[in-house]
Length: 202
Image 1: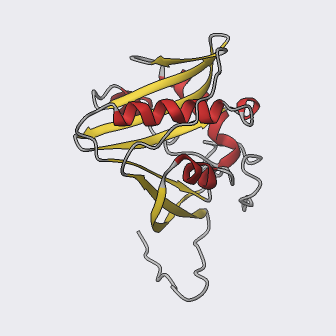
Image 2 (image 1 turned 135 degrees about the horizontal axis):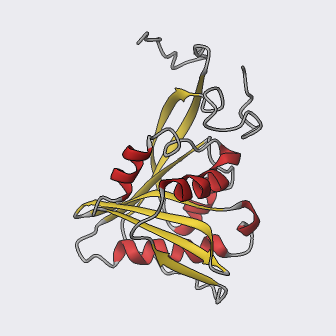
């Protein structure tokens, strides 16, 4: 694999077919006071087992507009192995028995929990469902007595509202990084019309 030199004081030209994101890493070191949201129309369901096609369909509905691709580039075998790990906790947010959100926690370390994936389908955004789902995420993370840290990263390949939502939820930024990846629209993992805020360069 060819290497390029990152210019830390200017522009770095990316090779053809690549996209780049700036990631912000955030952490929460204690459970904050939660603003309660009454959403009797929503239900949180632990998913012990799901078809990879069902998972990828929901993942694409939630993340396609923002160029989420992490789970979509996995083979079905890789994804099934990841989701079936005992240290992976997967939940659906259900409305009228249909999944409208995803909450995925990595609990592989005893003293910290990683928010692996979190999001809603577009039609559920702006209704308080995000706050409702985050309350569940925080509660579940800190329900483990040994947990001292709940953390995540978001990036410029996510909703522009995501970073401030996480900060309002009580997470504090502590690090930035740059992610470079193959553009998933070139391989057909996502449609070229996805994520128009990241221009598609065929």
